[in-house]
Length: 99
Image 1: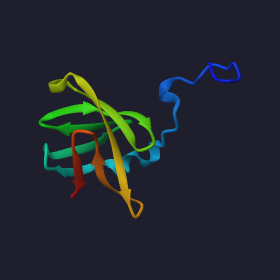
Image 2: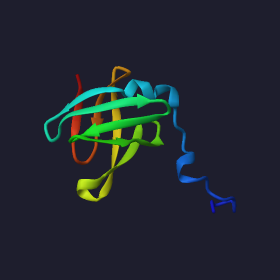
Image 3: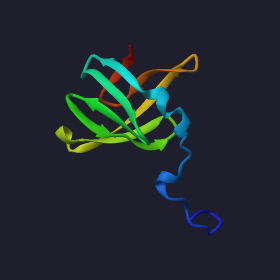
């Protein structure tokens, strides 16, 4: 409940711009994980990292999460822009530069 007594929105009700999701697609090079591929398959973008493909769940604009089984946790990734174009995929575990 917010400060006015109204219920809070559902966690995934945050603004997400599906039109920009295609801008995230591509291959990124990471020193920690090697090539990381982001693809759009219909409305569900995917990430392939360390040979495993997972669905990216939108959180907020250029930010997603995905389950990473080897660590038994979810990883949050944000796509960073340079001069308006997506150039990096960033998480607490890696940084990838779009090739």
